[in-house]
Picture 1 (cartoon, helix red, strand yellow):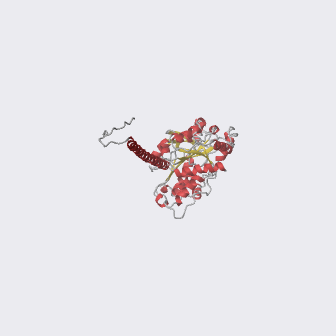
Picture 2 (cartoon, helix red, strand yellow):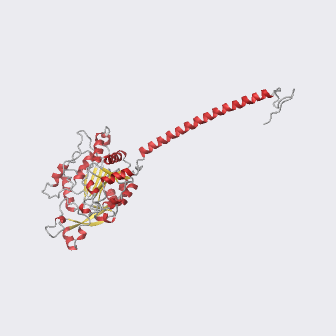
Picture 3 (cartoon, rainbow, N blue to C red):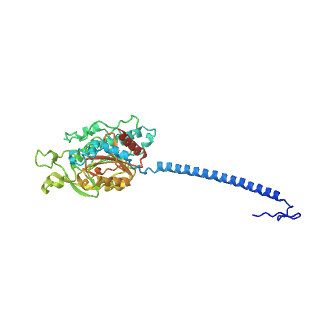
Length: 423
């Protein structure tokens, strides 16, 4: 911009008195300085506002994330790191998992044989001792045991979850054998006196239900008699004679020894005999089926829950042990799984497992919001997002899965997994 010098007596364009170049430059300089100062203040103000906005945004996002973590517990855990996978491989090596599964030499067979589920026991023990336990007693407990067998685990589960001391394994064992019934030995010694120790002043959770679903006719009859004799039916203990699978129908189950020779001990059928199920009678001749088998109704898990579970609330514990048809039970219970907090099942080479894969099971449960672990003796090894290909070898083992909606229990199990890796 050019600045023209005003002549003597000439007025500025603004009509003011004549000014010299010096005064004009001085005025312009002062104006520019003022503009710079004003601009600096504006910039400073804008910068402060931007910083405050950024901080507020970060705090808001952090608060949102915190609320999300608390409210939406379905967030997946991170995948196992290479170090964690290496440690799992050291704990559960693959070398013997390719042998015949009935030899039970595989690492995850031996690690999960007769698990000691301290994580779930401690969780419910902690629940019963909380300050709010009295108010929590208004929340009914619901447990379902599919393949209830001799019922000891179902009794222990109901005691643990409902805080009802009337559910006692010692009394149950005596009731089972009250009429001199010959009961098969428990593989994992479930008939011991290990059970939840409840405080004297703990208040029973009213309206609780424990469903003991057993397809073997001979075993079911004795279970029902024991429950009636102890008066446990009035306390919510339900004994049901069904087989649970993907779809409804009927199937034959053994009622007598399946073998024709006295030395065929593996063919024995007694009250509480394990390793007998849907396949057992199918191998017999038609004549032998008429002598040694009985027709039993099959329901899907969703159908059973709809017809027989009174509560519309959560299913706190679902235990599945059906001699090779465990995944079929879950496939027929997708709606029930949405209500379920904790699932445990067996994996082996029998029944439908022969044609199914554990990886598919874990993926389905993951999609339904569950994180699954190999269940050991006070130890857990995460399977979800820690997969190893040799896990698909059909070896006998036990798996425990927790719904990620159950933050406290899920955290307890993941922490035990991390502790297991350190051991």
